Length: 224
Image (cartoon, rainbow, N blue to C red; front, side, top):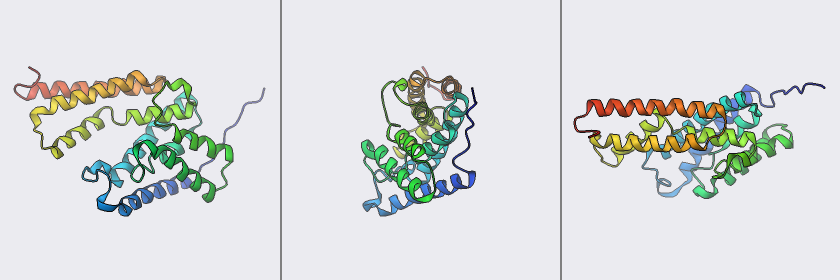
């Protein structure tokens, strides 16, 4: 029996070009919206934040795919385009819109096989799927797990604490906010299926628990 040899369909140079395209697309989405765009007063709804989230998801999804035997190129390209339409489409429609952008890009910028393009677009379309992860392809599962994990841990805690400032809340409420991050992380850990994603989730949850303990130790009256 022969061993299948998988060659990278996407070179590092091509992937870097895709990154630039995705950021430019996000930036144009903001510029083209009237009245500053949906919830633009929160900085994490900016092109810069959304692009950073996307790159975080790319890194996580690639790690999961490599360890779990998924097609890495399909996974990382899908991760890169998964939120490309987030700032211009309604939340419930952004996955399908992102898949259309990805298909147009991949079909016009390179000689990628149709099977590859279809796998990428299918993963993007289903990355918001809320059902059992056994029902989706392994590449889609890796993307969903990575998307869940980005807001777990130190990153999630930081984002929620920043949000406190925009809501004019005091640091005395920080334990409540961190508790919410912890609850979200526990939900994510319960939903992921792969061993790699479970390991990442538990590591990040441990960091949040440490931070909560430090807050309760240092701020009078907290945790009583």
